[in-house]
Image 1: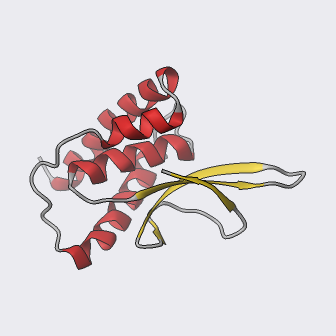
Image 2: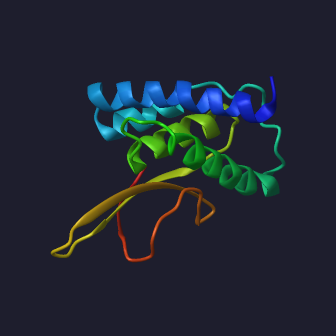
Length: 130
């Protein structure tokens, strides 16, 4: 099976787990569940390449989950990417931000070394980092 197809299958399978976690767990517990996986194989990326690998995986998550007809909000995408990065031994920060105005908005994304691995906007204020 090609690497892209294999990655897409991993994304969809992880998506199903992320949806299950969000129904049954709090957000911090869901993030902990996503991270609770041994890195297999050991991290194949040199430290200086891990952020680039995270960005590539983030793009793959975005592209793949865009096709899913069910809930694929930012929170689910961030959980999926958290699990995938943890599986590869790549650390990241799970960030929740808000826009506290009359047009309130909330958003979740991942960062590594201060770089967003999923799309976000600068107008959000960091509310929490896990």
